[in-house]
Length: 74
Image (tube, rainbow, N blue to C red; front, side, top):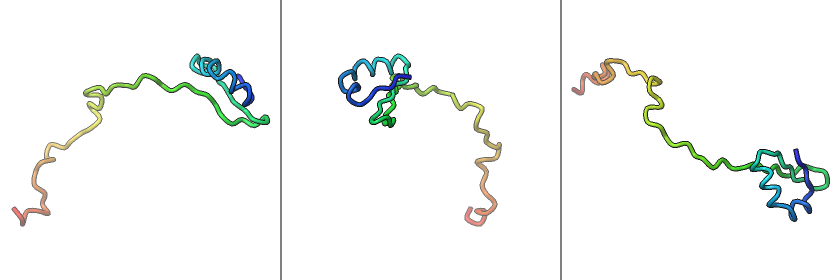
């Protein structure tokens, strides 16, 4: 873990960002109080995959049969 004060962070921001992107934990502090933690933003979004929920949903065989409650309207 790398901890830097606010003034050092201002002058070395690009180096701190590089360190965070490379997996190092970077904490920016002011008066020995932790204020900010630099973490990289995930750059790769997962694409949706067809059929990924296959087998998770089950329907009964009579799901499209008329309901008894509505028999009088038929």
